[in-house]
Image: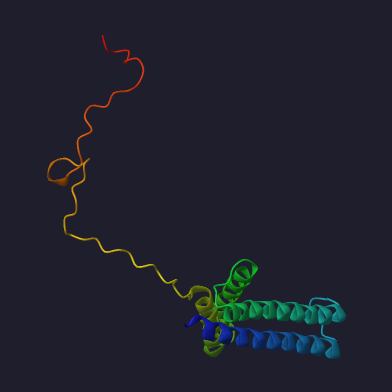
Length: 172
C-alpha cells in the first residue's frame, strides 16, 4: 500500500537530482573552460571535459536509479537484480554525501540528502506481505484415539532397538 507512492516520489526525486547533477557539472566545466582555470598545472580543457563527462555519467546513473524506482512503482513488486543493486548503491552514495555535507555545505544539504536516503531505503524495504493461508486451528477436543499411542495419548514406547546384522564385538 505504501510502496507505490514512495517509489513514485523516489523516482521523481532521482530524476530531478540527475538533471541537477548533470547541469551543475556542465556549468562548472563551462566556467573552467571560459576562465582557463588550472589546478596544479592541469590542462583547463581536460578539466572542463572531465567535469562535463562526469556530470553526464552521474546524471545517467541517477536516471537509471530513478528507472529502477519507477519499475518498483509500476510493477508493485520489490526491486530485484540490477535495480536493487542500483538503489542500494544510490542509498550508500546519499548516506556518504550526507555525512560530508554536514561539514562542507550545511544542515540543509544534509537534510535533503537524508530525505532522499530515507525515500530510497523505504523503496527498498516496504513491501506488501502476501496473503497468508489461514491455518486450521488446533482443537482441544479429543478425537479418535491414535492406535500407535500409548496410555493417556502419549506416544508408545518403541521398545529396545535392535541393529541388523551381527552383534557388537563386545558381546560374548
